[in-house]
Image 1 (cartoon, one colour):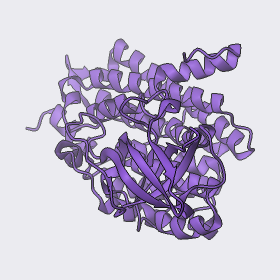
Image 2 (cartoon, rainbow, N blue to C red):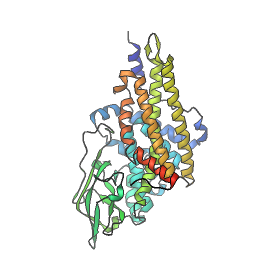
Image 3 (cartoon, rainbow, N blue to C red):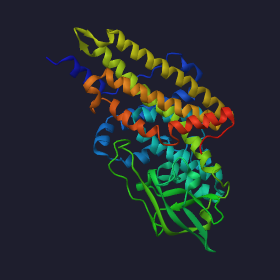
Image 4 (cartoon, one colour):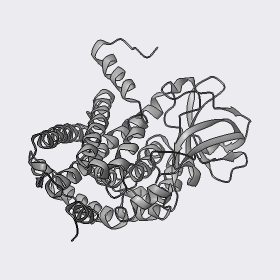
Length: 403
């Protein structure tokens, strides 16, 4: 006779995910939001959940997902429809990221880099010619993009970057390197931030195939294993002058892009948290020890109650931030608070969920350990947990503590 643990394991493998909504947040969503959520949730259950554990175990990036993301509208959801985007609001964008990261953080990274860090700067700072050339192909998934800001020696301090370009008359000459770049090994285009001869930071669009431009892949990751990560290396790369983003320069330009990405992460990380909670709740009800479900024990109920509490708080925070973003009022500090809170919350929930699952929690039969490992990257990229504390501290006191 099949034991209870094995039966529970098999039932969870079917992806019977149910989103917790303890405070009726669904009542705050409109019908379009709910339709988008239903569509992307079905997509994740069909195209990601059945395969993600295998992809992660093999450190395999499923490149075919790029076109599928394009088909479902996951790329550039807030970009106007005339450029191939979805023309959606920020709550819709958050819902998309939440549902995709519920499936896997690496999959959400693929989508959010494309939309927030590649399409957003081209739309926001690019020329009309650049928008028409790049955005439709990025939106459809025909092209994959990446964002080059972090360097080997400059992560939390991007203003210290050494990547640079010189005006050669009829083109720019780009030199330098970027590191920890999601999508880079497969990217067709890269939005790269570099200093001109006066030390001013500008964005340039670099295309695969330009001589001197290479994208070495990063191997040996224990996190985001289903996402492809690499470097961007520029050795005397001739970049056409029409590839310079003309709309904005200075460090504020890439920081605006990071605001957009961090907003998506705030929603996305809670998607991972909800997946861990849902798995732990099911397991606690179905797993028998001492002759009864482990969910009947006080300490297990305490863990589940605390998980649901923190998820509910984060859901309300993210929804309110989405409203502010829709109204054009969302600030860098508010986005920073939400990103830090969501990822910290998700990590704590993943760790508690792992304990509820016992030894099974470290296996690929459940999503817990994969989420936990992924979140260890999410807590670092797009601004570390501590840097986000300092962003908020600067806002509170008016005194920057970065140096």
